[in-house]
Image (cartoon, rainbow, N blue to C red; front, side):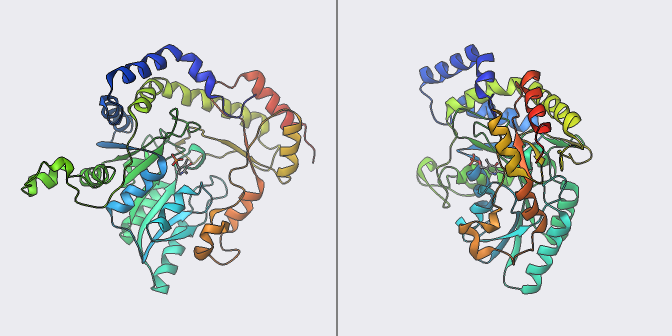
Amino acid sequence: MQFIDLQAQRRRIETEINSAVQRVIESGRYVLGPEVGELEKQLAAWCGAKHSVSCANGTDALSLPLMAWEVGPGDAVFCPSFTFVATAQVVPALGATPVFVDIHADTYNMDPASLEAAIARVKAEGKLTPRVVIAVDLFGQPADYPAIKAICDREGLKLIADNAQGYGCTLNGKYSSDWADISTTSFFPAKPLGCYGDGGAMVTNDSRLAELVESLRVYGKVTPTDAAQRNFHHDPKYLSLRIGMNSRLDTIQAAILLEKLKLFAEEIELREKVARRYSEALGGKVLRVPHVIEGGQSVWAQYVIEHKNRDGLQAHLTASGIPSMVYYPVPIHQQDFAARFAPPAGSLPVTETASCHVLALPMHPYLSTEDQDRVIAAVLGFNG
Ligand SMILES: *Cc1c(COP(=O)(O)O)cnc(C)c1O
């Protein structure tokens, strides 16, 4: 049994993927070829948003809007500590300060009350300027956007939805890009919508921001608005107006993603079925089974349970031939790189408790009912 079986999906669409890749190879348009534009169109349409701009990975997708807003030294960016390190690491990489916010115990997503308290603390200290909130759609389910967006509006803060694990998730039928200034995602292979290497994208309804991040992903190239406002004496193709980076999506990856998108809605349903079956069998038998926010649809990047003897359970599962993973064993504020920004001990109690109890079980759309039953039996068979 595999924790995430990527080959099951590949076998299902092998012919389509192989010919899509072959077409790109023969076309010779390897970087930002026509498939990239087509993918961006479809990614935006999926979320009912105006724009999508692809990039090299989900980390750059977070950095690019921060760069567009010129976030840097002296700026505070609020984010959870219970997430993949990329969410927070982009902040000091630009010279700004990450301010860590606690999570809800039931959804593992940002707790709006903790966010409000963190903003008030930063304002009272008077050393940093609050600028941006990064909410994460952890394990595939949407953050509490109505509450978080209201706080951002009141405080004049930009909102990024780190949708790397949650592309396609909804809250009351709406996507994170309906609330956030920009929603960012990753196509790392193990994410719900993954490619065959690295890839990422941003989705936004802010036309000016879309133009800026598109410029920044290619060294600050001239945008259509720049061209309309200024007369350039050279071919603007080789002019650079702002400091950016090189963060493009390979055409081959876009071609692969276009094939995968055709299955994506069905795969979300298949993941939902696995999750329901797990929860029916395990609910009440372990410390926690996943709880999705009311009105939310998770895309189930992970199915995470809690157990008071998590390490014992994991050893028992391993001995039974069942793969499992701990996301995340060390909260970001306790990692070496974040020592300078760490809040006082005990100030993120929900995060610290969750990190001791969480265990992710095998989850993918093609997990057979037999394998699900083996996982369930092994969990229930642990009495430690
Ligand atoms: C995977 C992930 C990222 C980073 O994506 P990459 O494509 O690996 O750079 C950022 N945030 C979260 C929450 C993630 O899970």
